[in-house]
Length: 156
Image (cartoon, rainbow, N blue to C red; front, side, top):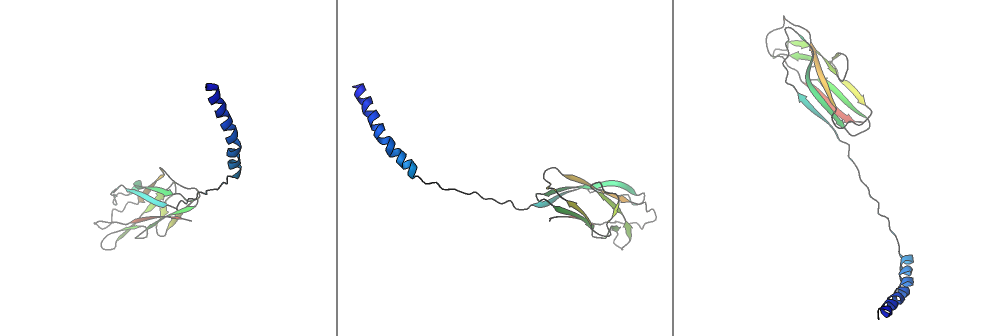
């Protein structure tokens, strides 16, 4: 009996194989394309150290903050400028000029805007120190002096 069932199964498979192969030959294929887009993301994270400066004695290369540049674009620019054009100003308009250093630069006046061109994407831990140098001004009028340093980033 087992031989009879096995023989029937083999015969059934032998009949089905040509039919199955004919379906395979008639099958059609389709392609599915995947697409995606990554938007340009450029942002700055600024850690303001809220450092007070000794204007009477002066300060040299004091780190006042760190800037983390993040941009996933090949080619971007970082700009640094000052609201008071590179001077600490009191409520009466008295000015004490200062200079900055950024990303290994020499001393720079912020009387205008400085730009750093970056050719490669910058992601992850990419902190740059922002340092300030103020000459000694023992003759300056007493009061609170301030300025705002503006840092920008933009993809090219």
